[in-house]
Image 1: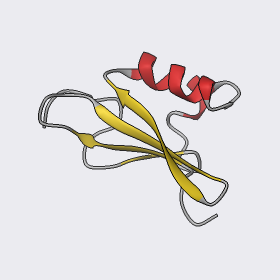
Image 2 (image 1 turned 135 degrees about the vertical axis):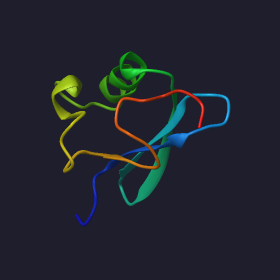
Image 3 (image 1 turned 180 degrees about the vertical axis):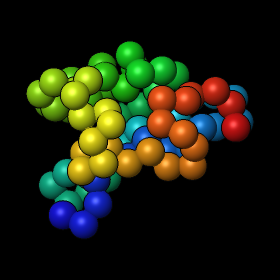
Length: 74
């Protein structure tokens, strides 16, 4: 794998960040996260064991277009 399978995209103009996961050769939108709790719930639903532990692991999660853990409007 050349990049992290989970992408937390840049904050939107109204707040929140789209979250996608790459699996089985395609990207799947998990939803829009408005905080770390939402992100953890999405990752649990996607089958990630101990999702809190991977949030800051660049092999698992790539934070794009903003600082990690910031979800306010761009």
